[in-house]
Length: 437
Image (cartoon, rainbow, N blue to C red; front, side, top):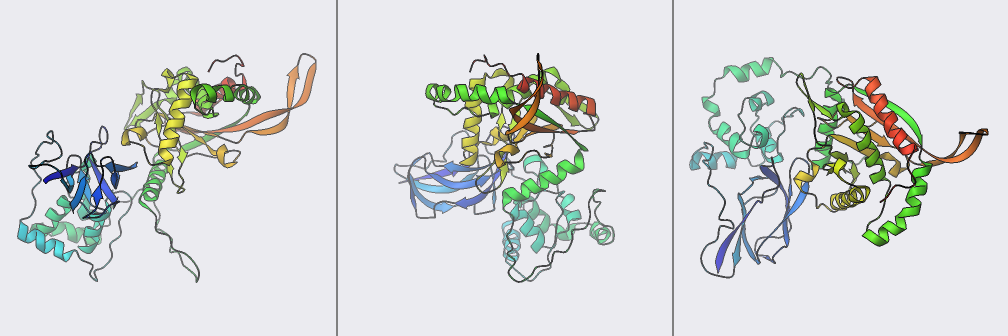
């Protein structure tokens, strides 16, 4: 028998670590090649890690809520054959960050067992993994102290090793900083307000936020604090769009094996409007405006558990209607079945949200950072409308739909935001019935 180290695989550019959510097998269990053995989470995506070999899990190296780096062993399997196997010949040995000696580490980790210590709360300004937050709370490490720790994780985040090293050397740190922290609170954003005390009554149910809901909450607050939102509305006659889709949807499904929804039509209109007004396709970096070359459309997608994720249609301007339909269906399916890769949620330059799928007429969507605009599509509803004809005005039953366009008023003024929305409206309202798919 041989030993095989199961490594945390690469999860896309810029993703250097992940948090263990749950193991799907226990030590001693046998697994088959391609079995999903563990669920992991990055900042945006939950995904499974399959095993490339069959064998028995003899030791789990990374437990629930612990953070593993890409290329790091997370479990040891016993497999058929002779000689050891690290699971990858390409894993490079990196010089580890300074950590406390074994005796000190043992003392620290022993002290991390649940004790009757005071509870420390942290604001959303500092990202902490569940494990690091637990250590900080049990060691009574203030947020001011945490901000002084140089993190070696993704985007400078504090890892388990960083905080254990800090705890080990805490006694040697200058005392002035902690004393100052006791009298001078850490600066808060000007718009922040103390959280209201919420009372509970008999029968109330307390539901802890899951990891994704916490990330959504943090991102939404950050988005509203960062960008001054303005929302414009327009009502669009999409009768031609509805007729065109009804004419082609069965033919398309028979030919491609894919459903033809309204979303690729909406995305096509957005792409055309972005090409007309490229300053909607920008981001802000300090005092600089970054005009994006690629048009990558984020697509807000509701998940079965009630959470939300935004997979990205890359280079949407290079796709035909058929290509958009396939890309959208694929991303939506993988999002709802937890099959997205981290890179599938990165790089969006503009986002669309279909609130009409819930029967809503309109909404005021929040701009995902670092984008500067987002479009919400409402429900398509039959209504009487006034039409201009060569014989005069008439009232007819039409398919009408509201669109809501939220934009960042730091760089998108009402004229640009409004004209962009009007162009999306025009493309949809004047949809060519002879369009090929």
